[in-house]
Length: 378
Image (cartoon, rainbow, N blue to C red; front, side, top):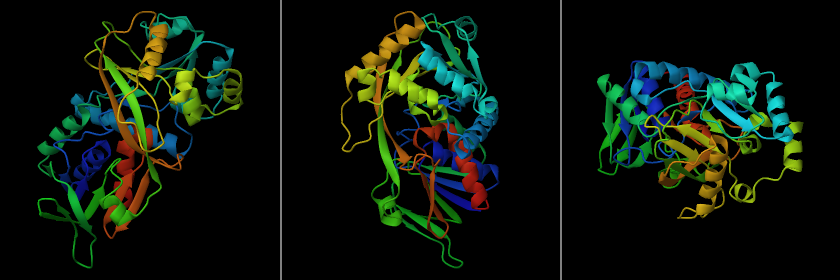
């Protein structure tokens, strides 16, 4: 079988990976020299802890297994089974962590509630004040800026993979009878195959609207930053209690009490924020983030969210944050029904659109692509 994949972000790259793994030939088309969207502008977290139960958690857990397996074969993706810690500072936040421990799937996530001394044994860099910390053993990390490059290098070594950058797909036709599906790029070249996967990320207009119509997927904008090396290991990823308000796994009466009894910091509330923090292999910290849903998005970044994040991080570390060396904004695609893991739509015979995983793209992409491959009978 020959598979054409359009879009070289992590979702598209994982579709190419599964196709090659199953013995198929892949032609991979990307409109830029390499992917430049949300697949690079993220934390690199393989984030299990906050996922909703059922399909979302199952997908995240399967993806975590796949990432670990891929990381063993392609060490350059930087897979680390680091877990995460969410420090809590008062009884209201502690009650939400305790409610999470009472979930029937708590063991699947590797939840443990730790006192400060236990948390610091796992992550000595957390020298600030907190009452307890929720540990999720199943969380992990990869390197978002280099993972796709490493996967592409491995795919090229297979002899079954062709990468065509700097080409924008202008037209897609489905298979008819014995005729294969085909895509035409902006150089006028036509590429035929037995299946086409459009993994276009947040590029939802143009060709996507023409062939799929208005799909139930929206764009979300976020701001993030990265620091100089911390100078010591941050041995887990770190979240704050605002992540309880954001992630569906923490929905509970205790969360209702937290929302009613403890107002979110005004800056965090205004920008729909939470703290997530991961250390990169070079020692720097990736820190975020904000959420903006209303269009048109701002074209500039705002300082207040960064200042808020610095205060929260420094309160957990008990020390000044290293110099911020990068700030950026990114846009990702999210299903408007946020309980859906992904929007997977057959748009022509043999042609599938796969988009909208939201903030789950880096985490869930290996399992999303595996499901596509299974459903298409690759």
